[in-house]
Amino acid sequence: MTTDAYFAELAEALRAAHVPDEQIAATVEDLRAHLAETGTAPEEEFGPAAVFAAQLGGPAPAPGEPDERAENWTWTADIFNDRRMLAVHGDQGWEVESLDAIGRFVCRRTPGSALRWEYRREITAGRRRSRVLDELTPEGWELCGEWLVYGYFKRPRAATAGPAGTVGAPPAAPKRWLFLSRRGKAVLGLWFLLVGGALAASFAGVLGTGGLATTIALVSAFSAIYTSHLETEAGRARRR
Image (cartoon, rainbow, N blue to C red):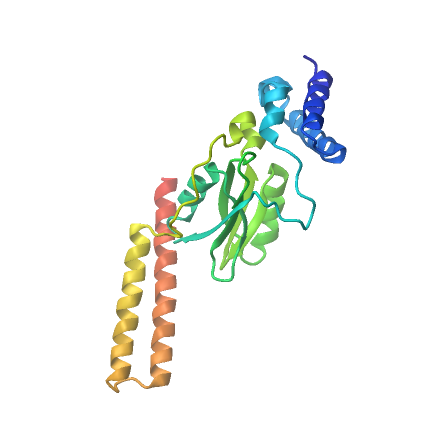
């Protein structure tokens, strides 16, 4: 089957699913551009047109209108565990839409048409931010949130995996929202221990209000520096 015939069949199947013509045209244009980059045949890349059309789902909700079918879930992880959990949840069809004010991942997933997502984390502090964006945007990566010095990027796995990039029967949303690694638990336990000691000293009259605030600030700064050190050492170990 020629490329034109493939996309004609795909467009017809999407039209039968009541997908608007403008959405069909945009989808076909994106897929043609992808094939131009990969140099592969459409059936080889996406599978049979009718099957692929079913995997693409129905009409997209209009801009500004929420999709009533969508599931929403917010979760967080420590810096040693975030990339692993993003990979796990992205493979289940969870798309990170943003990071909230306290660094939690705000996600959504649409049953029946969920895509698998892949994620990466990069340091985006200072002038490095524009350089990272320039490098990753042409590869299909989209910035989905920033926290401290880190930027989180996403892209649908279908861009590289074809039909395998969709989720056939996604599992239920996890009941947990906090995913800590052993190192993260150790750092958090140390923080609570030191802050608890400072509070006890304050109640005993050893520390005043100002001293308590300064101690908590110093402990938090130490925890952040120690966490960064552990993450740096882990990164060096992975590169060896």
